[in-house]
Every structure is written in C-alpha cells, then in structure tokens.
Image 1 (tube, helix red, strand yellow):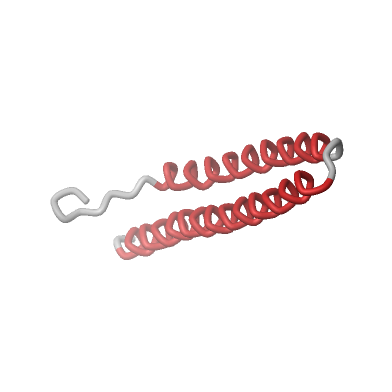
Image 2 (cartoon, helix red, strand yellow; image 1 turned 135 degrees about the vertical axis):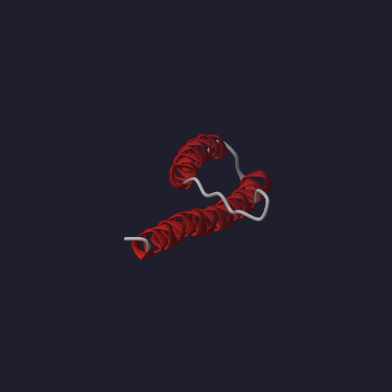
Length: 97
C-alpha cells in the first residue's frame, strides 16, 4: 500500500507463480535423488538400522509431500490473485470506454 492506494504488478505475480513452480520442480528432483541414494545405501544394511532408515524415510517423504501441498496452495493463491486483479483492472478500464 502506498498512501491508501494498492499497487499491483501483474507480471511480478505471474513471475512469483513461475518461481514457485521452478522451486517445486527442483525440490522434487533433489529429494528424488536423495531418496534414490538413500535406498541404494540402505540395501547394504539389515535389521534395526534398515528399519529405522525406512521409518525415517517415510516421515521425510510425508513431510516433503505436505510441503508441496502447501506450496501448491500458495502458488494457486498467487496466480488467482493475479487473475482477479487483472479482471478488476479490465472492468475499471471498461467503465471509462
């Protein structure tokens, strides 16, 4: 806000949505790589160590999926707000035409 005026940069909102998508893709790729390496390593283990790793990996996987859901919701809100602001801008512009 600036002196009671809301300034919206449509391009910045679109860029933020794209940035979130890139971050999600990178996070997923990095986590998939880590999980693959961890799985290879855990194949050399047995017993309690292997079970403990599997349980911890399950928690990490759930946490990463929860984070992805949250980030997708944020991304959706950002892109929805971009669309809503653009529609409001068009409607205001049309009033003067």
